[in-house]
Length: 229
Image 1: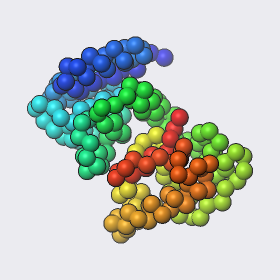
Image 2: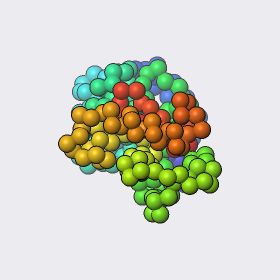
Image 3: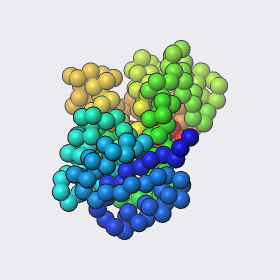
Image 4: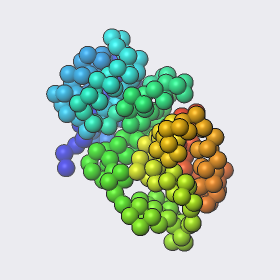
């Protein structure tokens, strides 16, 4: 398989230098741009496997770049930004980003998020797979069977729907609004406490230490993510 192609859209030279060393050292083929306008051209020409995008670009807002790319491309987009407010994360995800990593960030976390994104793009996505496994947790969407350490776990219909949605988006942040809309329906999108209550139920059934979850991870103020590795 050829080395994955990455387009980095970042106007800070020091961040570009750091990521250049990190990504090329991991055998990624990296192409860099510093503006939104150049980004749209570069992504069209390079057809990358993943895009890393800073929201604070000099010529246009990164959210507009995401929306423009989503008009014609399904390339995984990982937002890398100093905008740490919850509303900024939700806005980026709602615009079409696949994931969000806040600055300052660790290279290990970013690389892990990239691996998940590449697996999705390569067709090994859990959205298209009936079976999911991480650690001792196994979910078979075809058989509607959930087990931990090979012992079946009984879930209520709502608990199962919530877990199934996270499995289909494993490794990606799913916002409270997305969960409420898909699990409970559009009329419940202002009932965020529903998600918290049922997530607590799921953690008690699936996690060895519910207070320190390994699988069902919280993205504070934004939503939840099912660990994928």
